[in-house]
Length: 239
Ligand code: SF4
Image (cartoon, rainbow, N blue to C red; front, side):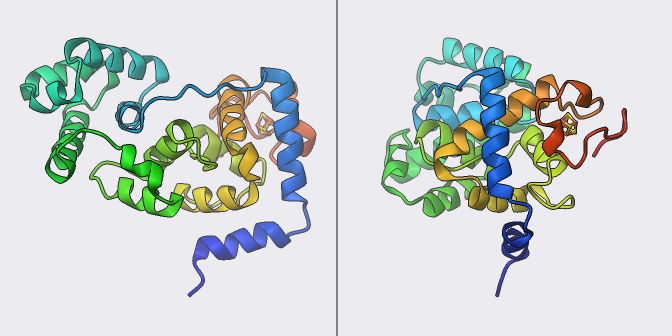
């Protein structure tokens, strides 16, 4: 049975709008504007926990929470065995601290029980689809969080779709306007060339923060406005 996202992917491919050509051009212009992104690599387990802390908060809050966590508990074993309230207090700046502490602890306990060690280095031997399935098998780990581990830590050509990427991809007509985040992952990872996925992800986030903001996109300053079907999108209106 052909999935809804696969049907939409075919639609995007066949719609004659030259989606791949536009992606290349958008990526080129955003790289001219913002510079080529650099990839900072963490170990897979570090990246997973960093990504969990980043859910529903800013990068700044995530970084404060992660730094406090590593400072108070220098090893993942210390995190696994820490008193619950101390763990929650350490990651409080990231918000949703009770929920995130539970998710982190569950992952560490599962790894300890299954492998006797706290590492996700075994992901390196897995194919992308298997690694995604494995990671999303943990409670509290969705496709975006799993994709961050593949892309940033393992260097795989897999593009995470966060709120900025999702919004820009919709506005720029790279995905159907009603595509949900999960469909957006499937579609974008089939139409963005593998070698460009990491950079395209970063550039869309940069552009989403600085110009194509959710509530007040600055279309008059946008370097890709001539490629955007949503240019001039109404101020104050989400789309
Ligand atoms: S033209 Fe406007 S809506 Fe389109 S990408 Fe640029 S800022 Fe966003």
